[in-house]
Structure formats: structure tokens, C-alpha cells
Image 1 (tube, rainbow, N blue to C red):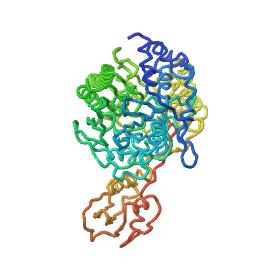
Image 2 (cartoon, rainbow, N blue to C red):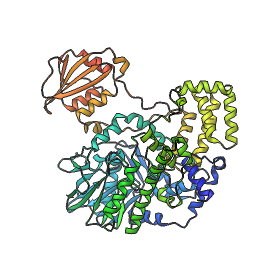
Image 3 (cartoon, rainbow, N blue to C red):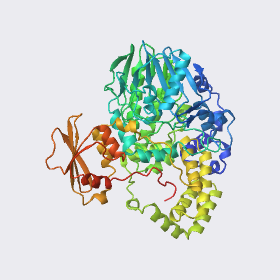
Image 4 (cartoon, rainbow, N blue to C red):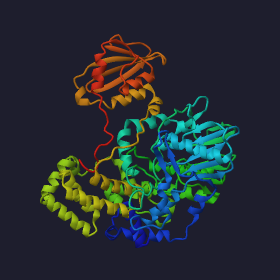
Length: 634
């Protein structure tokens, strides 16, 4: 590997680690790569184009813009000095918007949300795959298809979710506005469990961090948000969930929907805990879900999620090569553009397989040499043969991926006793700044490191000052400048968004979030067990230490009674068909009434027997999550 390419990959993955690059982000990381003769991606991204949504804007019923692809028209120009050239190229590709023909009977709408919506023409209607994030963008995508395929009367005859991330199910009501009815809603086994654990249990924290990851509050410009690497942005419309009615449980399972045969491959533990690829054998096409896209993906996502299994990811891609090789002419995914040609598809899958396998195996090798996650991230580099465009770190990065692999196997602790019982951030920062000679001295030292090009350590020093004294304007201003320089220098879109959002909040404060995955339709799709779990994780333990409560929640329509117990600061429950004579209060209700109660709308018509004050005592110790908690300040 040439020095410039090695510097490019290490700097892009590690946040402008190379001092020379960090000093001059205008030098444009990736300039050499964009000079390579490689127009295949642009050709494929344009192939099959039928029509764009004009203007490329989607609004909700109140007239509020929930998606604006036209805001990225600035990407038509050459890369400026404020954006890595390789990232600029990726954003130019991803901003392409409209209806595209993939192959006979298969169409995609791209550029109307973070993800793609795929439409397969059945014998009588339409099979929709992954209905985007919002009902509004999904409805606009379906209308774009119908307008240009003369399919106004064709109904959706099946809905398929490839996996339980919100950008693959959130717009379900945009394609099935009246719910599932008799339309099969198909998903991999375990879909609902993982949709809940990601979008409800930790949904508030993930949504807040997603604002950083996707640059929700950044201006769409060459000095702000230029995309996410995987797509341009997330839509801000109405999120919903229609619960699956049919599960796919095994590789090799064949189902026919509206006359279209589909052969499934289960890939649990890859890009999502429950995920599946699937082949259309009669159409010689394969959907790779989000397991093989045109970027290095996340082994651990920066918004927060379970660590993914890079070893299994590589294994299932190898299985895909065996299952689909020689049987397909086109591979498409839930993001980016398709790949045409049997050899080209095998090459893409092989490159991605070896990418995840290399990261996994080399991380384990280095772990067993005694290296920590941070040390591995600094040392590891990809072999030249794996440096193609589709393996570059636009969304995932080599740096944070190998740290995720380390975390999966070794946990948070690196075995150094000095790291076993460290002070929390504010307390540590105060001591650090005191040891450095005070706030002004620490800021001065940070400026010196920044002048020398070591932005990483400058950020460390300034972060300590801000946490020791969040009112120190000079430290906050200087840290914002450092974050901006780091953001301009990195190839990774979500690192850029994190850096620039951090800079924005340091200078302008926290902005109120505009989106949430915890919508009424999302909650309605949950089981009663999952709804009770969502209450249990919000119990303020110390406030509930002395509570002793036993209550029954009776659901006649479901034929079940839930016995809830609060003691020792914990809410637990079990269920059967009979009431508990020891319950202090019994509530008789429907699931809709429970949702209203949990939403703060009171008892309404819920039947109450016993001491209703016990319910009030329970609700009094249920915390309300903070969707706008501080990140770059204490």
C-alpha cells in the first residue's frame, strides 16, 4: 500500500489521525482515489432511470417538509475543500433520486429516504419490500411508481420487511394505510422482538444519538451535512409499524406471494439480529437486504445498538455466494444502487465477505497478542485488495468497527487496573484540568497541539476543560473549531456529522429533536408483555425501593390476566387466565386503553376494582426519558 493510500484509510477511519492531513483538510482525503478511472458506480446508479419526483420534496398533511432531496443539489459541483473528496463522490451517487427499473417486474424508488423501497409486480398487485422510515415518504414513493407504471388501481398484495431497523418498516402505513387486513406482512423470525428492543426500550437515547449520526440539525451544505454514506438523511414524517403476520424461519424456505416465488436465506446476527436475503429464482434477481451494500457497514453503530457479529456476517455472505451464484443477473439491496452481472455480483459479495472476515480475524489475532481495542484501531489496515469503493468507510469505519469487535469478545474493560474504577467524566475532567495548571493553561496547551496538527489530543484537552467548566466560552469555542476541522477531514459521513453536530451544540446549544421512533402505531404493534417491559425499564429504582405493590391487569379480549409486582425497586410480572386474590387493585381494559393510560391520558373507561392509589404510586416512580440530553457538555 502506498503511503498516501495508507494515510487516507487510517486518517479517514481514525478521524484525521495524520497530522499533515488534519492541519489541511482542504487537501482532500481521497483525491487520488477519485482520480482513478472508475465510472461503473455512476453508470449503475443511473441505470434503469424512469422518472424523478419533481420537486424532490415530501410534505406531511400539515404542509411541513419531511423530506427534501433537492437540498443536496450543491453536490452537483466539484468537491470543495471542506469535504473529503471520496465522501463527496459517495454523496453524489447516493443523492440520485427517482424510480428505477432493476429488471423485469422489479423496480426501486431511491433517494426519497435513507433507504430504498423496492416494488415487485405480482400477478394481480404489488409486493413492497422495506417501506422506508415515514408514511409520507413511502406513500410518495408508491405514488411515483404508480404514476409512471400506469398502476393506479393495483393494490399492495404483500409487504416484506428485510430486518427490524426503522428505515425498513417505519413507513408501513404509507403503503397499507388501513393496516394489514388480509395482506401478508412478512419478516424474519424474531423481527418484532428486535424492533422493540432497538426502537422502544432504548429508543429515546438512540434517537438523540441518531441526531448526531445523521446530522439532523446541520445545514445541508458543503460546510454541513453532505449525507450519511448509506443514504442522504432520515425523513421526519410519521413512523409506524404493522406487525408481521408471517415469519420466515429457515434458509431454503420458499413462499409464493401474488404469483411470485421467493426463496429465503436467513442471516441472523449480521447487519441486524434478525435479517434475511431472498432470491427471486424466476426473475434471476436477489435482494441482499442490508448485508452487502456499497460501503463498509457498521459492526457497531455510533447511534447505539447491539454489537453485530462480523464472523457470522462473513459466513452468511459466503453462503450467499454458494446459494445464489449462477442463478442471478442482478443483486439489489435496501440502500444504494444494484449490481448487474453474475461475475460482478460474486465479486461484490466476495469483497464484502472478506472485509468483515478480515476485520474480525485480525482483531482477534491482535487481542490475543495483548492489544486493546484502541491500540488495534490505530494499528490495523486493510490489505490493498480490499480497498475498493464498496469497502470504504463512508458509514462504518475500520476504527470503530474493530473496537466493536473487541467489545463483543472482551467487554468494556481492557484489563488495565487503572481503567477499572475511573472517575466519571466531570470529576475526571476537573482533576485533569487542575493537574494541567488550570483552565486557561489547558486551553493554551490545546491550542498548541492544534497548531501542530494534533487535533485529536487538542480535542481531548478541550473536552476536559468543557466538562470541568461548561461555562468556559474560550474552551467551547476552541473545541468547536477543532471538531469542525476534524469533520471536514474525514471520509466517514457519520463521523463528519458527529464532529459538526458537536461543534454546533457547543456554539448554539442543544436543539429540540423533531423525530421519534416511539409513535402510537409503533406502540400499538407491541404485545402487552412488551408494553409492560417498556414500563419496567423506566422504573426509578431508588424512588421505588420501599414500594410493595401487587396489581392485576385484566384483558378480557385476550383472555389473559397479568400479575404485576413492584418490590425492591423492580417491576416484574407473570400471566395466566385467573385473577390474583392478593392483588391490591385490578384494572380491566383493552390494549388501546393501556396505551392511553401509559400515554398520560388517565383511566378513562378502564374498569377499576380495589385501591386505585396503588396505580398512582406505580406511575409516580416511572421516569420520563429525556430526548434532548447533553452530549458534548455535562
